[in-house]
Image (cartoon, rainbow, N blue to C red; front, side, top):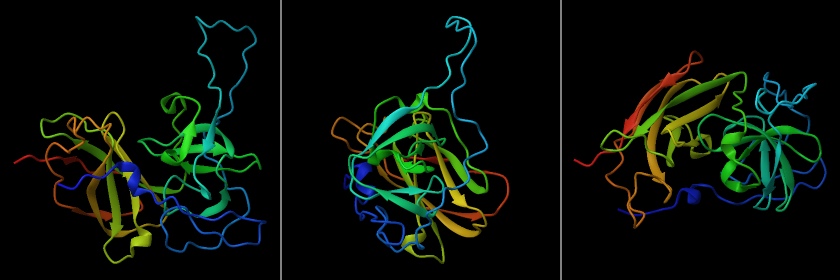
Amino acid sequence: MKNFHLISLILLTGALLSGCARAMDPAYPTETYPPPITTEPNPPTQTLQPTATDTPAPTLTPTPFQPFEAVVNVEGLLLRSGPGFLHEPYWTYPQGEIVQVLGRAPGWGWVYVQTANNLLGWMKLELLDLKGDFYDAPEVIPDDVVIVKGHVYTPNGNPASHIALSLTPMEGEVSQQDTATTDTLGQYYFFLPKGSRGVWTLAGNAYGCESNAVNAACELIGYFPPPLEIDVRDAEPFWYNLQIRND
């Protein structure tokens, strides 16, 4: 079985944006996206800013979340309007840019950030160097998305972490493909743009060496199940569970 690291799914390409009027190339995928939007998106309805208490009492009152920094570790990283590659990009940032982490999407892979030019949006986790704990950030679920989610399990039924999946429309192009990664509970989430519909193909296709589903040589213990065809509708979230097989 051919091994490949999870991070290899993400093409670290892109171009700096010089002024609002210039076009930009996305960091991933390489296909063309709509023209960049230079206005700030509507943030999720959840309030993310920490609130102060009149009489701090650490043993009695939960400590408000304090946003922490993250550093862009690729050139031309896109800020997107939602947590997924199918959401519109509207700004790009150079390597070394510092952003503030305000939250995270459920699953593993996207963080909600505020940039130095005061835009709010989403960046790919693997393309950032976080200066805090990903799981310390509060979960943020954006409005007006279609959610496809589920679990991936090891052959013996345990949650499988750091497994990458793809979701591709049957009649679409590779540029319309989105990816998701399981968290420590084996959960994955796709946040598709509002109005996404039709038959899509869900498939497990990569893993990280930190996954609990690999051996010491970073080899997957078993093999991925066949791709699953699912009917996506603009309705309640859908659950699709997959299990790595060894038979």
